[in-house]
Length: 252
Image (cartoon, rainbow, N blue to C red; front, side, top):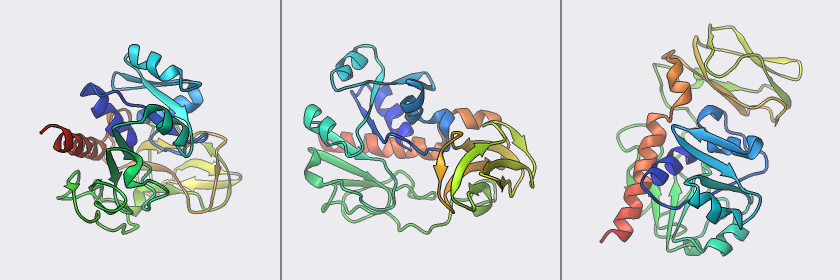
């Protein structure tokens, strides 16, 4: 979701900076700017994010029309340096892990766990359905149900999860077509098996340590390979909501 937001804001000519963990765990790696943490840079739909080694690299990345990305887990150093007008919490932890309403002139939280008017100024709805992407100026988003959204008639079945703690190893690649029962990956010696047929839309990187029950990938039952390499409809809608929230505040 963070990449969808970043892409939309970059294409709308905002100067943005991405803050990441030292070991991101995104499964939709082909459309996630966080891959720049590992590879140095990542391009998504014509927009490039570049990992910069320090704060001094931010302005240079902007001059190059790239999105600077820094590893700064609590974001405090970067936020103090940039003094941003807008902070977007796109962690999607289903809870607030430290964002405060005074972090910037406009603080936006994505999904459940935030209360507009209390710990953020605006919440953007992330739940699939009629209100996806809606901005909320008072109160919070719809509560987390713990059930993945329906895609092509499938919900929990399309999500790949580890059944044990261990080291993740992929047996397939993103974009591969698989049948129900295919071993898509393994955690140590325990297989991760596709519960439905479709296209592998997301997988963790090889060698990542995972916990039992952790999401390690997903299968798209629609079977369209190009969907694996483009920003999702959901991420675009949420990105549009963030853009609306910014314009609502400043375009008066």
